[in-house]
Image (cartoon, rainbow, N blue to C red; front, top):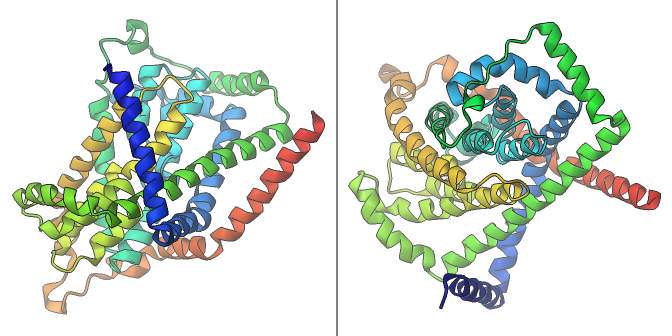
Length: 405
């Protein structure tokens, strides 16, 4: 039997098992589905939508090309990607998963990146945003905003290292003229390029705005489907004891690194879905805070199969391969865990005054991060209204364009 037939049989069996599990555990599946839907409705949609829309507008108006000429001297030597990659990196850091993949795919479709450059860029521009790290993880789960400094520092330091390592990805297959590419454009030339890009796009502002909303909402609907699917899948794997079975093998590896075996189940859950895995890690009672932080850092950096499936779906619209991205996620996970261990003493332990009953200095107290904490609180509180409003706008735009056909 050839491998293709074996693959078909395996996929059919897995789908059948999933359907059977849904029928055996309907109540638990519904609860997990609602949980995933709530996360998407209240947090993911309203937090990502503004960045997606603004990014589409910036690309259409030629701002990204303008920034690319300015950032070329920085991005090309360090990461071996065009200057436009600096825009993707910044937007990915600010908005979180999977904005980096969405923008990388968009630039690839615009032919501003080669396939190899796009594979390098997507490997380090997908990261968790500071709002989620400080608001949801540090404050919401661990009730310790100072922990956010360690998690964020390890996360972004690991991401930079991934970018520096991935600069060597497929460098032998890259045309010499691309590697040696250099641009020495003046500010006047950059402004002219911006103008040329806007003229080349040719869409009026109203059309461009409508396209941006429609494209962004469509992508977010796809993301919501993946979040709900993996929330249910994670719950079903737990109910059929698959998670416990795998945890038995994983605990052996964790003990080797002096990490309690009790963290094996939260880690496996985090491999599927970031939020649930981080929450389970914070609730583990038989582990030290350092060990919990290391596991949480790995989960955040690996980003979970849920996010990776979203990225794979976005990249499938282009010729960008998924394997380099998946390798980068594993690499980022281990690097973030190592950086968490290295940063623990200077960024967390040394900030505690032993003569003041463990009270942290004023500049490290919760008020320092009040804007992040308040931002997360407002997002959870009012995010559903933003989601509802833009979904209605999306329906109106679609209906108007259907009537015009």
